Length: 296
Image 1 (cartoon, rainbow, N blue to C red):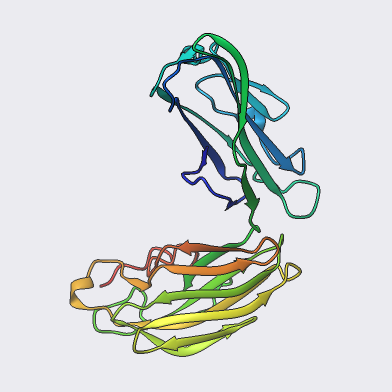
Image 2 (image 1 turned 90 degrees about the horizontal axis):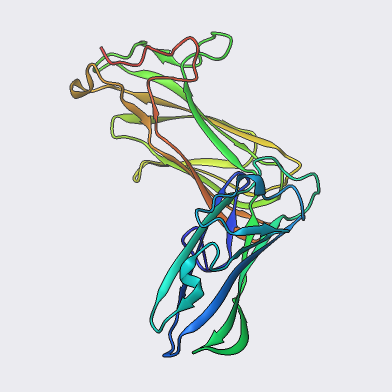
């Protein structure tokens, strides 16, 4: 059995679509008759984590108490599998996007059980069970990235010309926000690269952790050793200045390249990464500056 393209234990997030694929093959020389294939999915907590009413299964297996079963009634080829014959059963089911009412570390364990009624016509009632795959639910961590010239009340936080003009400096404020509430996080690192014609001003503010700029690599890096789940938000802001080039006339240039968060979910001991697309002069979050990003 494979979950989301992998056969080993893994981390998932609330709201994820869990895509399972079961591959079977008769590696022997005898024919196998009346095969039953079942998948058992046990969740912790027992209810509220898996949205069984949204199960997708083209083979229409029978669902009963977290177990999906296929026989020759659903898949005719399971009536007899000759030597070297093989097949695949696929299904998917989503996790709830809302956290279960029970607190703690949520997880899902799945495995396959098979029953073979006969071998070359002789009754054997042979059963097998696969190694389980454990899917642990990551914390609800999110990151957002936005660029501003004005704050939410219309007060300038940037400076220079808006819209920006070729060969003229315009300064913007970039804001990264991390939210988290399920688990403690450790070893947090946010990073992004600046384009060649964008400069780091040295002006920054952080609510926790430390921010630095590597002028040689043109990388902005923010780091924090530990973020407890009791702190549900961290905000990092910094100013950058762009001097648009002639080739960027009538274009919307990039201010900050894609942002990446690397961190460890301490409660389940899982590393994970999140990303946000590049920030541009379009200022999509800025009510007063939006629509003024095209270079003159």
